[in-house]
Image (tube, rainbow, N blue to C red):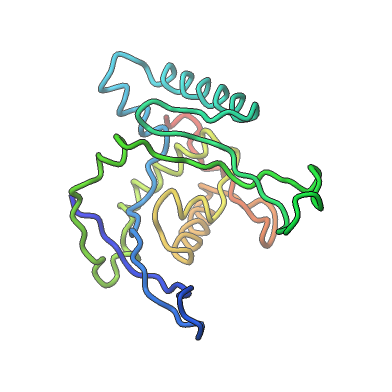
Length: 206
């Protein structure tokens, strides 16, 4: 299994001249939606998709509860989850109050076992044009979109990019093509524009 990579420019913090360096990053071949994992697990186990989804939803709710009660959550072999908070920088802790502390993110710390599973991977630099053609066939992307909109009220351009691996402009052009076909419709304007089911969207396709 080969992982494709490319390079991004990054400010070199060791340099005093604002120089940039190139650092490698994985070129994603797309996003696997949760429903696809449910289907695969159903085939590999005795559980049905609805049971798997229900258990996962229950687990997520319980994790949220524990995190809100300032606990670190261990999720089996996967790793540990904890809350990350932030505030304005201070030199004296007495000058800042609880009202200035805010939630920032959720930390994930993979377990040693989980990280071990990725040792020995082979890497290759992504060929020219790989990123622009990383998506699967059009009909497969359409099926991914159907799955997504059966569980979400709308999809944004950003979400469609993550779902399919398409670049920004190609993702937006494809969404607008679906609108012309009646498969999608547009809701909102400008930066708030999202895409919803159109008149030609197959409600009973799953």
